[in-house]
Image (tube, rainbow, N blue to C red; front, side):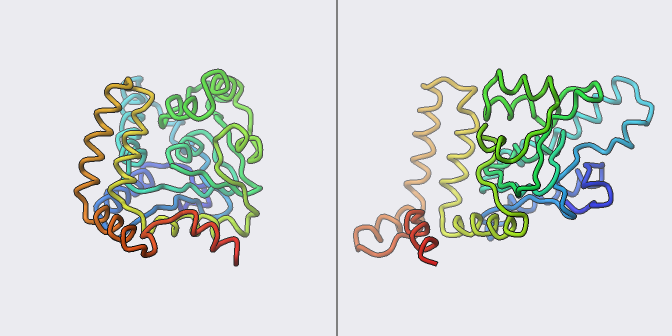
Length: 251
């Protein structure tokens, strides 16, 4: 996001650009992981408040927010790992945009806030769905009702943030995490992600059925067959997180 003069606030052109980029990334098999970040030491300040001064009817306001939400499921369910690298404020819709990622990496300068209540609004951009899944219902209510600001260490304790880094190391950490997925099965990760995203909405029987269908698809993939053959031939695995940990620790 590159509107540092407006603290990367989500205006209509930026929302459309995000939607277009997500569609492009979704269909590009060369892309194995995605990093979402903001320019100028700010992740995203949320909605563009200048737009809120325009006079609208309730119907017009509803359409404006509904249009904003149209592209969000395509980000939440993008069949590739999405990493939010948060430096500076992630306020309002900006915080919820970060929550839509699979991993949130934060700098020491990051700040998170469900700021909506300060101006008499409720969270949008799926914040009331995504936040309680991460922190629980009671904690989500506290953060939404109070509109208080979270520092990255507290956000990590709550499960919002995956890891905290020095500001000058944040982008390197995000790229290092993204690179780890370069040799992973995009099919397996995409299917697992979409099923996990439904885990709060479906019963165990429905989840088991989805797992069975996904497993059948993965078992028929070229990736799986090569991975099994490598195991039988005692060759290095295509994707081995533990080996990557050891290699990183040795450098």
